[in-house]
Length: 265
Image (cartoon, rainbow, N blue to C red; front, top):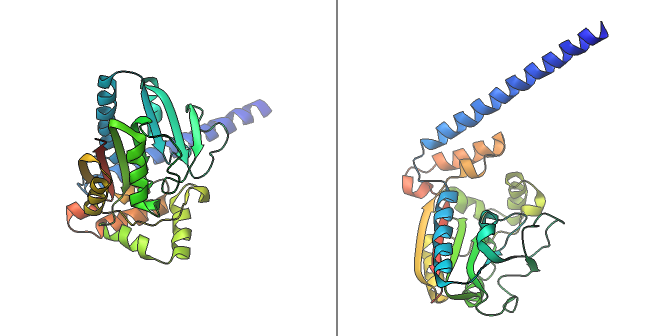
């Protein structure tokens, strides 16, 4: 009798798991269908991959092993997907990551990208990625000058950052820091991810001018993405992001993410 009851309990549990799995799939499919109606371009990750593919192709054409820096790597790196093409893989951030979280790196350096100009010798890298770090720069001109100095001639800088032209992003950056910190902890997976936001160089025109002033050439700026997908880990933040996206009527202004490429001369 006990064995029969146990089998029934296991069957009921398995049934509930299947139902919950279907609900998750339907929910995810419904969200994707809903946000696709916003018509605001490919996911930022697609543009970033294209930019990195070009950066690595150029570096490999010059010969030798590719040296890559993830400037502001946090606890993971998009560049990890390129590990087999990287001879020297370095990560830098203002805080040390948890042990073992960046095991694919050859080297990790604690550095402030704005202030630590001597963190790396000049012409150290072929590819530098700055993934959602520009919005945290207290001194963007200094940071871009450092990134330019650390690149080898012909090296590529690839940037993703939030687009301040999006009214919801602009409002978010404009609220009092204490209230913004609480909201940021909601949006991020952990409070440790919520670094101070500055947003001093976070519209396409300002970013392009800043990169040119730092000495970069072939500066290309694109905007894409939307808050609903970026914040969609949980239903409350998905809803919050969707409200922000739908509050903007011009399609071009709904794009919440900037993807930039620049080359060191």
